[in-house]
Amino acid sequence: MMRAALLLGVLSCLYTTTAVGQTIRFRVDAVGLTYQEGGNQGVDLGTGFGGAVDLRLKRFLVTVDGTATRMVPEDDGALGYDFAQFDVRVGYEFTPFLALQVGGQRRYVTPEFAAQEVGMFSIGVLSENQLNRISSVWLRGAYLINPQFSGGGQSELSFDFGLGVAVGTANGRFRGSAEYSFQRIDREVDNAAVPIQMSVARLGVALGF
Amino acid sequence: MINRVSACLLVSSGMLCGAAHAQQNSAVRSARAAYEQLEYEQAIALGQRALGQTISRDERASAYEILGLSYGALDSTPRAIEAFQELILIDPDREPDPVSVSPKITALYSQALGRMLVVRNVKIEEASFVAGEGSLPIEFQIPRLASVRVDDVGGGLELRVDSLNVAGPAQVFWKGLTPEGDPVPPGRYQIIIEAAAGPDRYATQVVLEIVHGPVDSVEHITSIPGRTEQEEMMQPGRNWKPLGIATLYTAIAAATSLALENTDLAKPPRKEIAAVSFTALVTGLVMSLKKPDAVPVESAILYNQLLREQIEQTNIEISEENVERRGQTMLVIRLSQTALPAGS
Image (cartoon, rainbow over all chains, first blue to last red; front, side, top):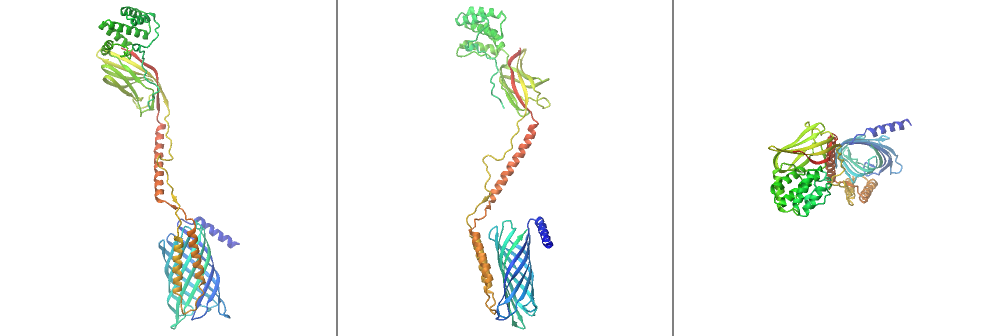
């Protein structure tokens, strides 16, 4: 109860202090995830939830999001595991359709070594296009710089790619979104390919101020 | 702001025009009857007898008129001119009617007039004007060259309206201001027109009533005639751009993710890209089918802005003018007395 009251207080302050040209948006997501790792093995499927905070300050964009999913391997008998991922991206809009983004990503797995934990930086671009006053679509692509793995190894080619669409109210207060992201990391350990590939779908609702 | 309700103020008896004026004095009436029966000598005798009696100004003018006409008919030119001169002194505005009066008589009258110094046909119209911005025209005629002074006397003031040398018609303007530039106080004023030529002098006067009134303020405007505000928003036609953009982005995303899938791994289910692509395409379609939002028309907005600025500027000027008007005085001029000779 105390936490809810505190949250309401924070939101009220944001509502009254948000400046012109500044938007902050809180989002909660339902998450569906497909994860693949190693040789020609099976696919791990997971569902969970996520949350994100998007801040737009004139031409600057900051996104902090996290997801938590319970992964279940398709192979019968394999144990499931928990999967948590956090992303931070900071962008600058050069034009209304194109922004440069840099960021970092960290992925945690429980129990340990059920899948690779990864940490990496990213640099990429974001292209968001307003369909009209209440909706937009965007594409995102990023190169993942020098990923670090809990099981060791290195990657020469890693990238992240995404597609999103959002529809909201004209005043920007409420917004629903669907976002797809695809990640491929060509990991090698002792010259042996142990690739990682992940697809994530997020269906979210956001409250903006 | 000349008020044309009132016309000529002059005394215009018009006997020579043949109008039937009732004469109170029997001698004048008999003299006229004798003249009309062409019995000029009797008319002269009766006219002189009337002048020996106590009669009114109009009757006196009529008696001299009959004498002038009768002497003229008898070719007694000096006496005719003398009688007409007396008539002109009494009623300087009287004119012989060229239709009913012979040219010989008219010529005699003109000779008499040319020898006289009088101020004739004084014409002042009722008017109202803002003190300092308008003036009252005063028209008159002088039959021969003379120095003329026009003065305004009243309200404790004696002001010179104008002075000029003139022969024939003349016009001067009275502004209704004191020497300090203030409006003259309300009250009765005499406009005195005095003509002088050598030893001859003649003056006439008109009495005016001056009333102060407020100056009407100007109403503010809400529009400018001939210019109307334009629609600032325009409803565009159906737009398939949202569907096009959504399709383009979806195609790029789907093609890229399919092309970059790692073939060393098992074929993934791809339901994530399918679900989000479907959502993006449906969103694009719905937004294309949806009635487009009205878009602003920049030229109309700029036009309206300029129009509003112009109205605002005009209203500011009107406000400033009203402030000035509140400090102004409207002089309303009414005529109290017609032009009368003040002396000769």
